Picture (cartoon, rainbow, N blue to C red):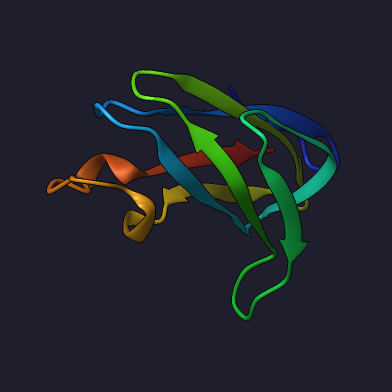
Length: 117
């Protein structure tokens, strides 16, 4: 649903290990265009998250140190604020170098466009 400029929304990224072995997790979340990170970050699976600011984006969030058992799921909950009217973008990507025995990386990135009023 649309997000009003100046207000925050909560977004949940769900990670599932569809493989047959335990795997390390390295998750990157980018807040771009009219969307910025704000508020608390709640990460499962032992993930530690650090906020950074890279050129061309508002906020970059990197979560590492977690381990996900075969077939298990975990979540990372973030809050984002609509800075100005327009489209905000939240992109979540898993680092393929930490994924064991996977040949199709297409499902390792999801993008959410948020309309900000």
